[in-house]
Length: 469
Image (tube, rainbow, N blue to C red; front, side):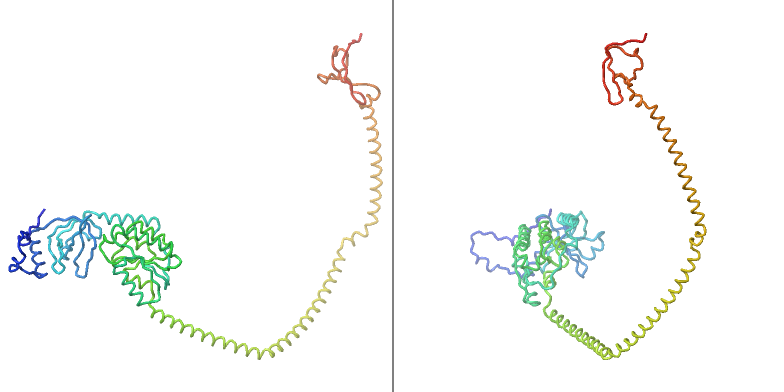
């Protein structure tokens, strides 16, 4: 590590001497002379050094040189990479890259800022802030917070506008000036917050919740804004809490943070992004003169359309009047045509009916000639005779069948068991197996018997069995 040693004349030790002692030896520097001497001291005492840090606030003007800031967790250092050295690099430096720079330390005299003039630049990886920005952006994108379908439409001319920004910054003054110039009748509510530092994110979230909760019915549009700054200064607008508060806000919101090249998470979540605070004011407030011109143009268009429609309606009414004048003539002609058609229709119908009746009579005569009744009538006597003979044969046959049925019925009645039972006989069955008993040898004393009579039944028990001798 190279240390910086200043000449002895830079130090003045208080030894109790009167200040007037040195008045004759006083040497007064101009600002340019002092910066020049300091630049020589810095350049003489620092050989080319290696510095590691994260790139922020990178910009490339038309000259082709690259200007950026190297930073770590606690400090930052201005850096410049001239176009000639840039052409020798193997990659294009990007915001948030972690790099290793080799160069010489110098002082830029016009602004009194010291910087490193980079000769070589090596990529070491993404910086911590840039990595966190990328990860949060991907996370919120997956959740749909950047989806265009959820974004609300910004009113053309809001009645009341809320500005969430620093009350002492240049952004609020620029916006107020532009709004007063473009349309002075808009009511503006300024909600002051801190726009950088550790407290900024919490204050911004609180302001968004306050506006959305208590002024939702009064405020039409919200502008969340701040002026330009370093990458670190814009970090509150890359905070996840701020992004979710913007997404939850029910009032249309415009994000206008930093310069045109600066992008924050708030820009992606907001309903509309403005590249600068001034552009936000121009986007949300229409120019009064432009609106007057547009209204005048619309009035002329309406007058032209009205005159055209009136002309068209006059022509139509003239055509209707002409038609009404000729209406009686047309009606008379049509009435005569109707009467003529009526007579012709009646004559044609009567002629048609006569023809139909004549055809109907011819078809009736032909149908009568081929009717079956004409052929059946000569055979009616024969049919009556055959009908009589068939009736006699059927009656004779039925009489014979009745006699046969009566004889068979008598035989069945004579052989019927019921007829035998009616003469005093009985059918004897054993109760235990329902077998009919036909001889005394099948019985033993104590058997239970069922007696089936001609009318009814009876049960008995065998007391004594007598066998045939």
